[in-house]
Image 1 (cartoon, rainbow, N blue to C red):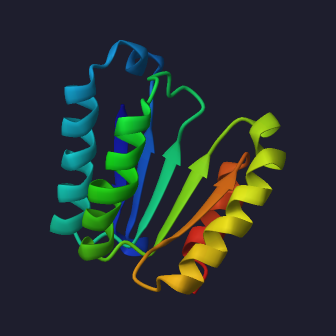
Image 2 (image 1 turned 90 degrees about the vertical axis):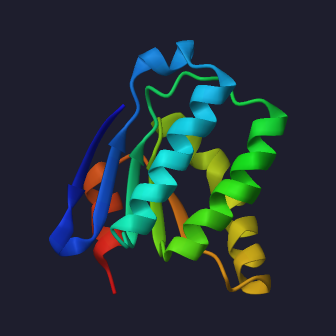
Length: 130
């Protein structure tokens, strides 16, 4: 993975690389916890993740861990917005997921907004809106 931090807009940008295919579950957890710690240490409010080359197969158990323990750490750290850059053909299917996610957010205000984009410029614009 490649990471950069833009301090003036509190934006962490992470580009996942195809080598993620070779990650183990322990490496996945370790990397994600390092990200959460970095977000907490630097009080990062925005995260843009380029997931087009993320090749690791996330098991149902890891999905639960990510949605639970990892996301809770992000909430506690103060993350406000996350934009995921994904392949264009995934966007239509995610519209429904975003709607459901928004409903869940209404039910649990202690969370951060997540949106999916196929255009990095649009993602950055959304991330930096107030």
